[in-house]
Length: 246
Image (cartoon, rainbow, N blue to C red):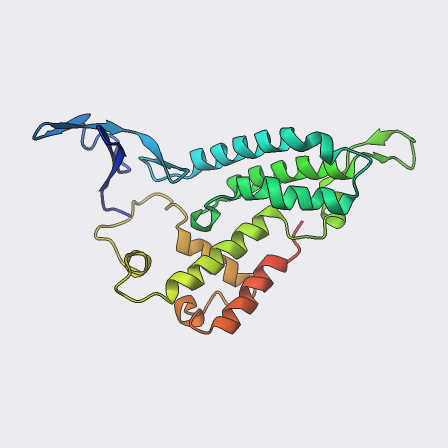
């Protein structure tokens, strides 16, 4: 989007900061703004409600932060995931109910590229290898790590990327049913002034929704109108989540 925006956040009762969001990082060079007796410090990023926001409107740092938190959670329970006293079913429940929510906090608003999707799949496969353990090679008799395809066959639940797609679509359906008086809905349907840059544009959040619907044969349809039918939208969300992709 070509529009330049500013976001202010009150951090505490006696300290206030602001962030200038623009593709042009030379814009707004003043690093602090003084108003009456208050000074507003310019920052390149901050955390808001547990989510990392950056001045270039990128989720790369947020994905890194989520994966760091997920790794910390994983290492805290890895003894349970490798224990012979627990069943595979229980270990998977530990992953899905303890580790995965930490990684996917706020994922409904993510606009993922293939690079971020690959990072999330790598993390999930690491956890699954700990859960399912190694496998003895039928030819050499040596123990080896499970391949990604083997993990995909053993893990019957939807993978992490599929979970993100389904949550994103659920949130999209929820927002589409809001009235025009709601700010979130106006942000969704609003069209900022200005032109997008000439080079390859970033993938927008709504682009992901359309790509997800393409996977179930509805990419050509007006998805906001489609989401007005709650039952049909739930069916599409379930279909997107349960597609088996290697």
